[in-house]
Image 1 (spheres, one colour):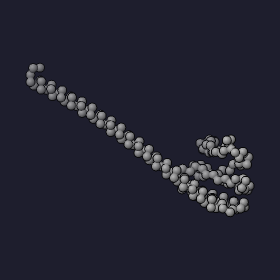
Image 2 (image 1 turned 180 degrees about the vertical axis):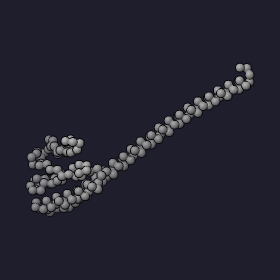
Image 3 (image 1 turned 60 degrees about the vertical axis):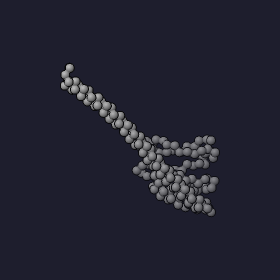
Image 4 (image 1 turned 120 degrees about the vertical axis):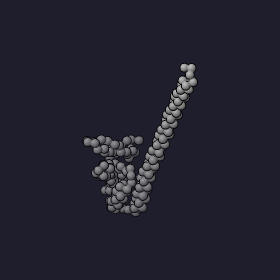
Length: 171
């Protein structure tokens, strides 16, 4: 152990081991930081993409509602009771066109107040997957308290198909 060759070899091996250890620690640290920052960036991009998709859905639905609302207001002006069914047919046609062009629409409902017309009731359509929008019977609101609130709740029926049923809740 007193020879210079032994000391030099031992010193070289120790320096090599220390260098490899330091390089390994720095490499692991760099990989961990890179993975963390990449994951953060990916999550941020996913959140931003989701936000933009939701904004597009909401904007599309809002525009469709504004278009139908503007048409209904202009078309209802001066209509008599006997002309309301033709009005309903025109509004239903506009709804059916807009729902297939608007992402995220699952149902649409238009109801004429029974105090305005006893013959024209309205319509209600629910999206049912491959079947598209299927017409449902409009709720007879004359059977309920006019101070109650109307809402549609999801319900399961036979099979895997999801449908909705209407309920009234008192205020």
